Structures are given as C-alpha cells and as structure tokens.
Image (cartoon, rainbow, N blue to C red):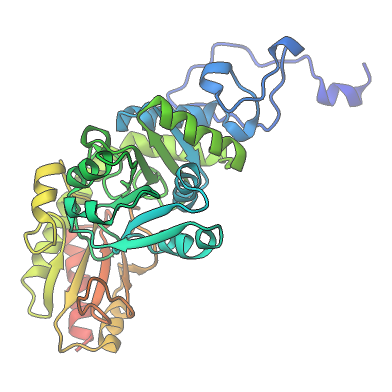
Length: 384
C-alpha cells in the first residue's frame, strides 16, 4: 500500500486496556458501518446504534445520559446552547396557529424568539403573571399548545407555583415546559411535579467555568421523546464533543460548587438586606422574594443568583456607578461560573413594579465571601 494510503488507512493501533477516570472525547461526523445491513440514519441512536455525528458521538450521549439520570428523565437531548434548547421545545410542540403562554419574568431571548421568528410563522405568544398559579386556567384556549414556566424568573426572581400550573394545564391536555436552569436540574425535581419538558442552559452550573455553551432538553414520556426527537433530528442541532467533555468534567464538581455557592450567596444577600441603600433583596430563600412560599415548599436549596433593588432615591446613573465601581464582581451576562458577576438593568419594568433603573442582578462566584462583601461595601460608598 502506498504511503499516501497508509496516512488514511493505517494498520498501527495503540494497545487496548487504557483505563481513565476521565471519559474519552470522541470526535467525528461520519459513522462507518460493517455492512449495508448495519447502515442506519436514525436519531434514535440509543436504540438503533450510532448513525451520524450530528446526532451525538459517544461523548455527547454519555453527557445526555448523565443529565437525564440527575433529572429523573426518560431521555435528554443536547443542544448548542440554552436558547437552542428553548427553540427545540417551541418547534417540537407548536405549529402555525398555536397559542403559547409565557411568564412575564421569562428569559429575555425566549420572549424575543416568540415575538420575532415564531410570530412570523403564525405562532401567537401571550404573557402571563408568573405568580397567578392555577388561575392560568382562564388563559388557556383550545389552540394553546404549550405553557412555559421559569422559576425563579430571570432577574426579578419570582418563584412560580409550578404544581398548580401543571394541574391546570394537564386538565386541558396542554404540555408544560420549564426552564430549570436556576436549579441546575437538581434543586427542583421537575418531573416529580408533572412537568412535561425540562430544559437547562448547561452553560451555567453544569459547565460551571464560563467556558462552554450547551443546552439540554429532558423529557419524561415516550410520546415526548418521539416528538422532541423527531424535531431534534430535523434541525441538525449538533453539539461539540469537546464542549460535552467540559460539561462532563463540570458535573463531577457540581455538588460541592452548589453547596459553596449557596452558603456564600445567602451570607452576601443577608448582608445586603441590612443595608439602608437596598429597598429589597430578591432571593428565593428570603421572605421578601415573590413566591418564597413556593420555593420553601418545592425546592431543596438555592443557587448563586439573586437581585437587589436600590432605594427610590437613587438614580439609574448612580446604580450604574455602583456596578462600575465593583472590582471583584465583573460586568457580564450569564451566571453559574466561578467568577462573581453584576449587571444593571436600566430599562427593567415588569408586572407593574417600579424596577426601572434600580435593579442589579448578582451572581456569586467562588471568591472569598468576606472579600466580595468588602467589594460591595466599597461600591456602595462610591456610588454616593
């Protein structure tokens, strides 16, 4: 055989038997078969064997299986990011003429997708008060195809009565999807409360180090598995095996990170609650947070994310100056990593509350708690 062919069809192999604590990273687009009888082109790789790299390599399927195991799901699909997971759910359950209910506190890009692309495709989205619980029944129409929950909500942190919403939805055969990113899929047991589809931005707590973009969509029934799987196979939402390997590594430390983040976050939120500059701390574990009773009943812990609302005497410019004065807290979107983050929302106005120009969301990282409190204290002094 010519050396050029040997470059592609080498007969040399590494010895078998290497055992590692780290899962292998399998990269590949093409899957080869031993015969035409074995050839498959199905997204159902768990049942039918590997078919194509876009449906997931062994690395991706291992990550998906581990997320499903943690969430108690029938199956988990991986997507290139949290927003892609949201889109997969919409396209799986909605079609032209569908009506969708989305809470007013939902992740901004979720609403942007519904108000933009989905509306152009004939899908109507209606916003609802996240705290209405079972009263959502009066908003359900014959054409309602999906109800979204996000608990706690992005930025304003309202905790929803998910069981009551699920009961109202299922009475009318409407599926419920939950953005369960805050809970990392473990602090709130979505499927035990009847949720049909649970999604996460694995970018956040599972990745854990602000260096990966991944999403997950988990389902609990065979019907949902088929419905989401068929859409997944058609959209070509391929994920990087290297990103999956980082998420697999992140899973190993998820437990200790969540514990450390919760402890530090509660201490910092408690300190801020005593400051005269702060009108209210919006942290699910605090009675001052809307929906706190639902959190206390349904969650097994809290995470690193919360918001603070400054007293009315402060201007938006002063609030921005507070964020600019922070040193350890970096200014950035996202959360769930090891670095503390801060972000002000000058145009935030939700549920008729006067949050505009006064709300700041904080993500607590793994820095020393006392150092973070000192940083906040210095920034509070600087803004005045």
